[in-house]
Amino acid sequence: MATITAMSPLRARLALKAQEASFVCRRCLHGQPSTSPSFRLLRNPRTILPVPSKALRQPIRTHIRNQSTISTTHQPSSPLAALSQTITRQAAPETTRKPSSFPTTSTPSVAYWLLASATSVFGIVVFGGLTRLTESGLSITEWRPVTGSFPPLDSPTWEAEFARYRQSPEFKMLNSRMTVDEFKKIYWMEWTHRLWGRVVGLTFLIPTVYFVARRRVSARMAVKLVGICGLIGFQGAIGWWMVKSGLKDDLLETGSHPRVSQYRLATHLGTAFVAYLAMLWNGLEILRENRLLRDPEQGLKLLETLRYPSLRMFRRSVAGLSGLIFVTAISGALVAGLDAGLVYNNFPWMGQNILPPKREMLDPFYSHTPDHSDLVWRNMFENPVLAQLDHRVLATTTFTAVLALWAYSRSSPAVRRLLPRSGKMGMLGLVHLVVLGISTLWFFVPTPLAAAHQAGALALLSGVVVLGGRVWVPQRTMRLVKSAVEQAHGKSGSLVGRRGPDAMMRAKIARPVSV
Image 1 (cartoon, one colour):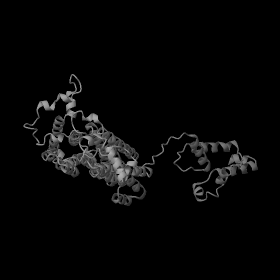
Image 2 (tube, one colour):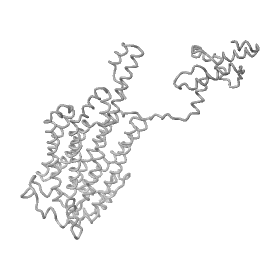
Image 3 (tube, one colour):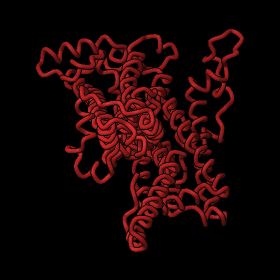
Image 4 (cartoon, helix red, strand yellow):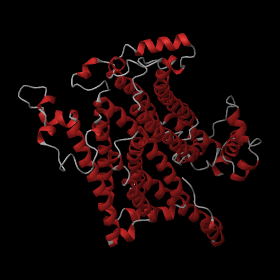
């Protein structure tokens, strides 16, 4: 004030006015922002503030410089400080990462849709087996993804379709006396199988677009769904690639009747299995995450229990068993493609002994090289006798492995104590599923029982996947549950700090925070 009084009266009044306009208390700033002189100065950029003396400018500069170092999360103490922070934020480079618009977890409705899609794929796999067993797969000799959805509706169209079928090797060698009415029966089987495949593709593609666009799935799950869509489209192309192999005469050089390539049949079935397992696994994973996040503390205890070293051997055995079952199922596709199930029907005997004669197992007829260097692997994949023997060995190994794993889960004290009830139920269900299948060979492969055999293989594979989903601990699930626990504890701590012990008691009985 001594400096102000030493100045002229006009300069002193201007300096006091500038000081008043530059510093506003917090009560005035929040109570009357529209009438504050500082806001009037900031709103009108043309207002010229009289410059005070050097003694007054230095404190103002120091104040502005100190305010510019305050974090942007704090409330500025003056309008000039707010203006300084705004300029600093605009000049500084953007270092914060934009949050993702996708949620952390997918909604349960996505899981139910995935499981329904998996059920549809399960049905089409079984129906595809019936189509092959009734020898209907080669009745449609063209692949028309769009126009093929409409079947023949009048006599001229049926005659044209039947004329194309008469050009196929199957008609010339097996069905030369077939009539149009008999042709319609096998045509409807193949047409239904193809239409079902189109329905599977559309009922998966359209909901995928909807769930991704509406952000009902996590970013990681969105990528998986798009991948499954591509796999379904690829499966349709493989299906025609398989059928096309049965419309050529070069597959008749082994002396057998026309059929599709066993290699392409195994590829077609394997791709369908992969698509089915992807839907099943991801659907169960979403349900499991949401169930654990409803009670994150109990979920964390369960996950930590499953990560005990005592259960490591059991988890790895389940993973190895799933691979063994998948390989056994694919070997069954080779048996089906070669009609090897009709060679020997008295399991476990193959003729008079457990093993067939060596001449039948390693027949030089199937070798394509003069030095017979491909004798072993050609007979494994193209000789019906050795292909059936391989399938029997794999099936017996699978049966023994399932029973051994079940016995291990019951005899090991640590596994029996730590394995949750859901894991024990899954292991017992796997034992029941492995019994189905051997009776197929005893009854000369009847069509209903052969279809049940294929359904049993897929059911067994589903059972081991369900068991794996109950005992496996993904890192992502562990992180989500830990984050939910931390958020629940953090919210409880903040309530205690703000409202005291009563708020803490209310936080304990409140529903856990969902991630």
